[in-house]
Image (cartoon, rainbow, N blue to C red; front, side):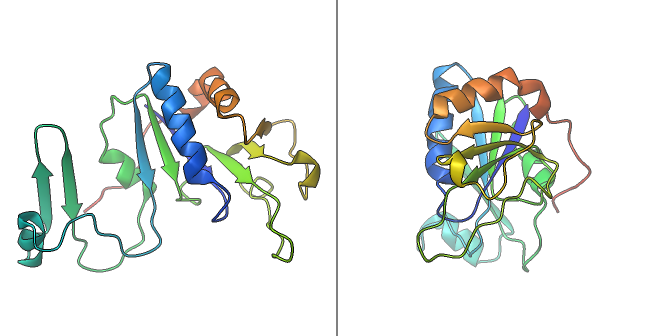
Length: 185
C-alpha cells in the first residue's frame, strides 16, 4: 500500500480535496482507505443502540457488523498520543492508497495545502521548510506564498485534483509504505 499525508491549517480545504482525490483514484481503479485524526472526542456509536450499550457496560472493543460493512469502536481508557503507524497497521494492507488527514508529525510523505489567510487573519507558516516529508505543495495562489518551494517540492494547483492524482500516480513509489515500529495496544 501507499500512504500519504495531507497537512494544512484548519479551513484550508483538506477534506474537500480528499473527497475529490478519493473519487478520482476510485475512477482509475484504485482502492482507497483513509485515516482522519480528530482533535476532539468523537463517537460513531448511537446512544441506546446495542453496540453502544455493550461499550457502556465496559467492553473495551465493540465490532459492529452487517452484510455491507463493519465498524470497530475501541476504548483507550485514557487519553493518549496516537501513532499514525499504529493506525495504519489496523487497515487492510492490500489497499492501493491510504490517505491520512492530520497526524502532521507522523513521519509520512505528505502533500501540504496552503491558502492565503482571510484579510485580518494571522499569517500561515509553511511546513515544507522544516518538514522534509513534504513532497508537494498545493495552493490556489502561488504568487501569495510566503516562500517559494525548492525544486524538490512539487508545486501543484489546489483546484486541480485530477492533476494532483496524476502527480500522485506518477510518483507512487515515493509513497510505498513499508511499515513502522508501533503497536496499538
